[in-house]
Image 1 (tube, rainbow, N blue to C red):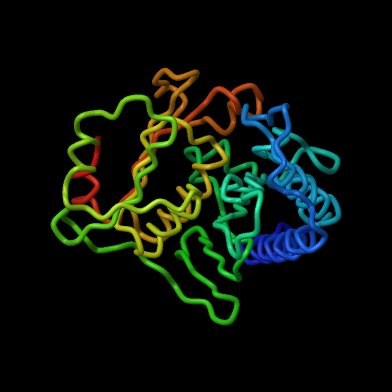
Image 2 (cartoon, rainbow, N blue to C red; image 1 turned 180 degrees about the horizontal axis):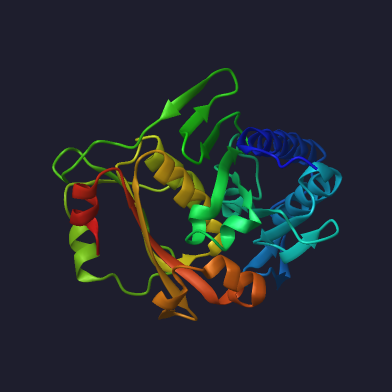
Length: 303
């Protein structure tokens, strides 16, 4: 079988994105209570919503029928590590089916900030390149809009509104004095460090959309100058896709890995292959992230 190239992989990703949007809108038209929470948790240790479960299963079903990308290794936030097709996997998929599910309310709102995010690459690259650099394409789809952000390794980052596609670049802002717009994630933080408190108390403009993927898309397209998540709550499936997109847009993206809450730099180079061999790491590994458009701004906001 001929190996799929980056264009082929992107077409698969875009097809999945459109199918997911259509599927979710149908669920809502059928008045399915997507905000319903279950008592059980997913592979990353988070409580599952009906939204997460249904979208993840729909995506898995589509990949099962897309045999041209088999055999496939899947790392999903919801269902963990699994293999599809026979033989040694040639491609890998990193999947966050629903990011921002807390934005789904128990009552109607017209366009909640919900993102489906995936990354696809070649398994051989997982063992030859550093962590997320093995990704060939990354894609973030706003489920309730036509907007898609995607990156192609070595070819840059792009935005599509459903009608036209344009290349995107990160912000050129270098200092905090330039009406700096920063996305700041403080979820689940019990104590704010003094450097971060000083940053928040300065004259920056703060933003937060309730979806870390979507926030980091704003860095990639220059709408945000930077983004900080200091909570140590982001998961592997939150980090890899956005890392690839921001880097392809010309930005700086750094992370600190935590294993059960403690700094674990020994995982930095090969955390993806370690997860394949030890599935429990999907639950144990967490990340703090700082992303910025320029090195100068990155240095100023590093906390």
